[in-house]
Image (cartoon, rainbow, N blue to C red; front, side, top):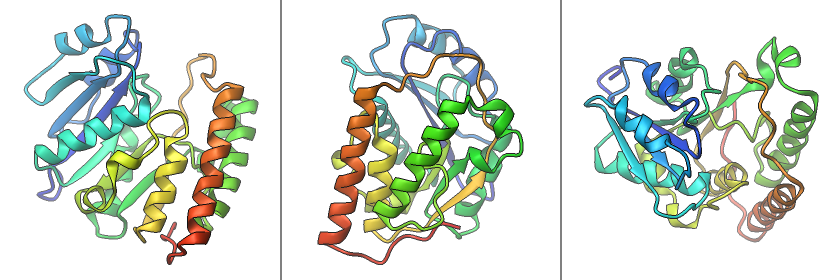
Length: 244
C-alpha cells in the first residue's frame, strides 16, 4: 500500500519457469496483491509460482493459451474483484526492474494520469542495452501508434511496464481489447477514445540475451491494429488522451 492506495501487480506469464520465482520474490513490499496469470504454459511456471507464493500472491492459470493481452485482462478483472486502486503490469520474464515501480505508479497516485507506460527509450543506457533491431522496431511502432491514436508525445508504445487506475479499468470495455500480440497498441487506442490521461515515465530496459518473440506475422497483426485504431479515431473522433 502507498498513500492509502491498494496496489496490485499483474504478472502475465507463458513458459517463464526460469524467471517467475525471481519476478515474484523481488516484488516490492508495498504491493498488496501479486496476481500471476499463467497463460496455459507447458512448463512448470504455475508450480514454481505457487511454491514461492505468500499470502499476497495468487496464481491463476488459463486452461487454453489466450495471449498476453488476455492474461492481463484476467489480472485486471481479478484486481477489481479484490478492490485495488491501482494495477501495474510486470511480465513474468523479469525484464521489468522493480526499482522503477514507484515511478510508474506515482502519476496515478498523484491524480495526474489514468494510465502510465514505461518508456525505455528515455533511459540513458538504452543504446547499450536494447538490441538494435528492437530499438528500431520500437521507435517505428511508437511513431505509427502515436499518429493513429492521436497521442503526440508517445515514445514507447510496446513497453509492457504499465499502471492503470481503477476508474480507467471501469471505463474500458475489457472484453474488446485485442488478446494477443498488438494488445498495447489496441489498448492505447481505447484509452484515447475514452479521453483518459496517458503518461510515460522512464524505465530501465532489461535484456538477458533472449531471442525476440516478435515475428513477421506479429508485425502484420500490429499493423492491422494500428490501422484500426486510426480508423476508429477518424470515424468517431475524440479529444485525445494526454501523454506527458
